[in-house]
Length: 486
Ligand code: HEM
Image (cartoon, rainbow, N blue to C red; front, side):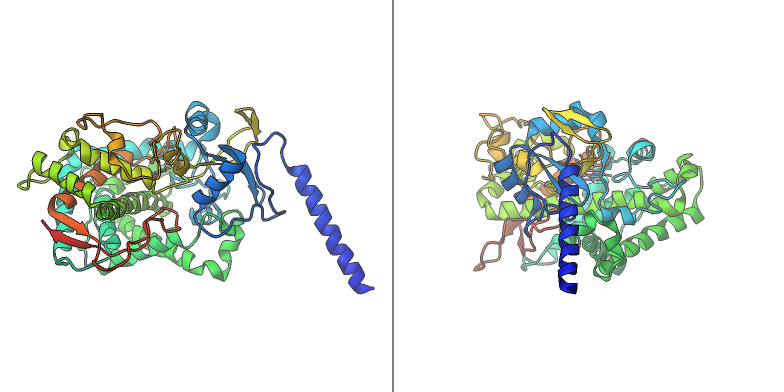
């Protein structure tokens, strides 16, 4: 008797949830797969952009699915992404904040408090922070020619570090992060760290955990309260460790601040009226956006470049021949050399095409109900621009899975040629704040390294995987490389 009633209660709940689910599905959504009640679409383990590519083959370039109480709309071609993020930018430029990121933002959602982050805030806090941050960073050379000597100095330290390895097979991923962290840390806090510095090694480790412990399909993305469970303790600790590192810089700047000697971005914040709007104790989260944005992304592009050119030694030789002719060995490359280095430019651009380090960008959210390409997308839907799909779309690229720098060159090979489907920094009003700095930094690190070293895979070992690691920014899977001085 008891078993029967328990079963009926269970069945009743299931039927109720299913009805609730069917009734709740908004009308006229883009097509998409069936999703489980409550949890939503059940992804198989693996890389999310690959799962989206498979679904796009079945449902078309604009499809939708459900996860938790959220509608996700995935855009898989250039037309739909530019139409949404550029032409209809007023509806598609809010940010969806995944649960674990939301938890990391100081005082999220509390009345009277502001979301102190650039990458994960919306409305006035986002506008005010972006409006303050960009000119403030530019006044310290962010993305400007005046920063070249500082980046080139770091490139010399990096080369010295690599030279000391004497060609031994080594995983250089953390070494690249140390170089890129130094460039952004000097802009933010006027501080550079030795490559042997224990504190920086610890912070880079916790940043790596922050970016790799939680995958796109993890339930905590959509059920934030799970973050308090023991499973996410290492993630919480990584955030606390990053916060303490940045707070120590903020506190020492507060103690030594002089309004007629603005040393860096942190001083610029202390000197600006914006510090009355956002509390200093919360500002670490904005600095974390820049620290992570400035470190992990550029280092990842450098790792991919070394890997692709080691697997394609013919391309490496052409890059080095061009560098030898245009720059020679007697001086460091400069961004002013870029127009004269079309093959180097094309090679770096091709690496960033074939392996966009944010393959599904950073999620957006609709700020209102919107009619889009014959569909109705409700307010609060999560919009995923699948940049990987655009970079591998056969409508845009001849043999998109083949690594071929020539695709970015004119027929005579003398001119670099753009392609509108190249969008590793996203498009529209929410595009990457750091793209100018990133373009300079990736170019200077790449040209400095290949000017001085030949990179070779260790002999008698299988080629490393060219598939990315499953993490927020897609790094290569760990690999070792030999750097032979030229
Ligand atoms: C090769 C290097 C980089 C790549 C490929 C890259 C790519 C991206 C992408 C795809 C987005 C999301 C765009 C969107 O929402 O539509 C983004 C946002 C952002 N990036 Fe980058 N990024 C790079 C380097 C940097 C650097 C060096 C910084 C800062 C120092 C930075 C800071 C940011 C910030 C703060 C945002 C959030 C912007 C906002 O929400 O308004 N990024 N980046």
